[in-house]
Length: 458
Image (cartoon, rainbow, N blue to C red; front, side, top):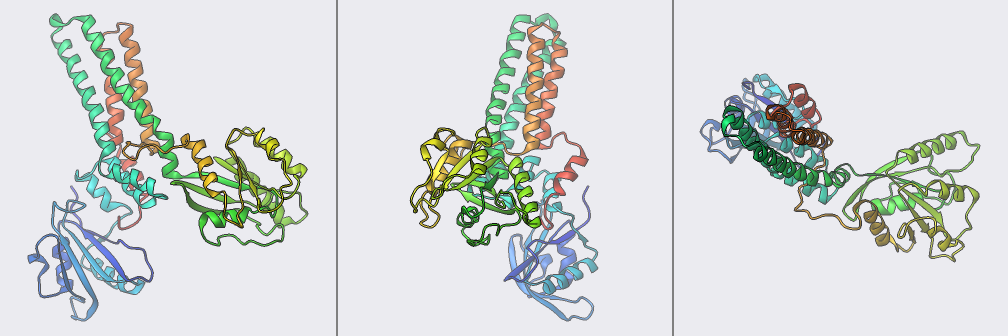
């Protein structure tokens, strides 16, 4: 049982309009009350109300901060415990003074993710919903946010719960036949086991089909922008990021290191890597940059090969085109506002249809075609409906695959007319794997590991 009271700063440190200090626990109201001077006593405040007053030093009575305090009483709070949220002025000094007084009252500093962990341990949310909270915070696109929000609402939990219910019904049917074998018709039982296993396995397949898209939307596509110096790689990064993230000059070799930036292209999050121009150079620093560019190239999910369409191709570029034909590559012919000096048809013959895009970063043309090309590679041209229950978490994907494997073994045993009590072992294993997804049967060490990834105050 959780008995201590915890506190943490729930907003980013630094200058701002307000900062929020969150307190949760059975004694949250009792321990904060001596620090709060107002017309209303916190112990008498109704749940889900907010009150103006001052935080004071309990010994001297000196005013420490002007605040608004929200009271949310158990079980109608995020953690299902009494929760007090102190809204004070933004700034490091302000929140530190408030936190110091809370700690003097015997309140403990919360661990990363401990508020959400308490919501899980107290049964308010399951593990998929808890993990979706951190996905909400880390969302890199509107669509990724929508997917996480649906999981917080319990869409995935509901789907997993329905599958487990079907398996429970199947195991109950098997138990009856084990206890009353005289009433068992073997052919009917085997047919029922196969039918139910196929139903659950097919639904798992449906969830797994969303996994690749979900993982991309959750984590983003690692995208390397490569090409020779001065073809417009940094300009492309700045255009997609909508800010001057990289230095752009006419001097070749300006970019010396790999620059990372997350951008949203047509609803798809990209982790863009602007690389140093790949060329032979005697400059030691540039050589290191070129080597890092090649490393980024080897690790990328998508490659944007930028060529200057107003200049003939160099031998290094021709070699790069041949090297990248078997990779997920989009060739960008930049500077199309100038006279064309490249044989576009020759390049298009080496890449699948739609993988060569004409672009003028100076005029801002061709970006829509680039978005379509990226979507065509990873989403076959269309992102699936936002109503779909996406699976995006690697842990969930692994457990779904294990559950499917157990059902496959159950069906194979069923077809071989293995005794049904042996078949039930595999069915129960599938049920348990699905239970691990929502946290019904999961090790405490895994729970600690999951919540350690959260930020403080969440």
